[in-house]
Length: 365
Image (cartoon, rainbow, N blue to C red; front, side):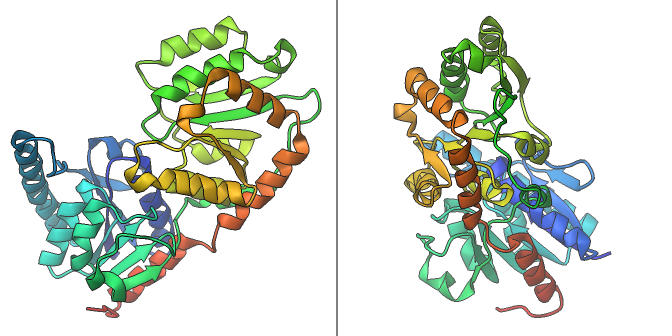
């Protein structure tokens, strides 16, 4: 069986698109093998083989941090050599983040074709550096910025790959909560959690009227250092809440959700669009080039969600917004239909098809 190496940084924004492409490759008879760091390994489904390498940013506030980052990348390169010699992949697909740097560099050194995929509308540092080594630079958004001139001729507008489970949700449609029935709310602060979600959201839900709180069924991904406080806050207000450090089956949880409260990373917005679920989007304020705000506003402009800057995410205002949304089934239904407009035809298959083309000798450079 032919093998393709999938290299991704250790966050859900990098790993989950790689998993979506792995699904598409598997259907084509290709064996995907992942290379990531320790954090990313925990997000990869157990049916896939994965290698963990050392990696870090070579940029830092002082020389010591920069030297440690370079040392980790060098050690990661040695680990990648072992992985390539062991699995003998036909090519490498990099999904950004510094753990993708050694596999792309070593893969090119071994003469393998390379695809680089960028999830956001601003080319990240790692992918910008790697763009000179790739045969194809696959983009999620047509307005992607920060693309170097040498990569202009390599661009493939592929879209943002999401796992097949999210597309299956949209085929079943969306039903808002029934009058007096349970209301399912999914709260996800990114793959690694968000502190503000563990602080403002439980307090906001606690401020809702008792009759509304009694109908809530909350699924909340919480940071490990906050989980006991969050559990106590929900219990204090008699809210039925299922807390997780990490949600391994996100499609299953999203399918149940009447409303999602989440970050506005490219992966999150693409998953919402594929599933057709309305969301309150809270952009991460320190994202490079503020790309999460652009993602959230793209959803809000078409009526597919509501953008709430973190600076405005007080418990009082959020409580009012949640109460008004879950009490207006028509608005939720309209948003669920609207956000689906952001979901293009299966991007994972687009990338898988391009990979098969390169494997068959259609290399561009």
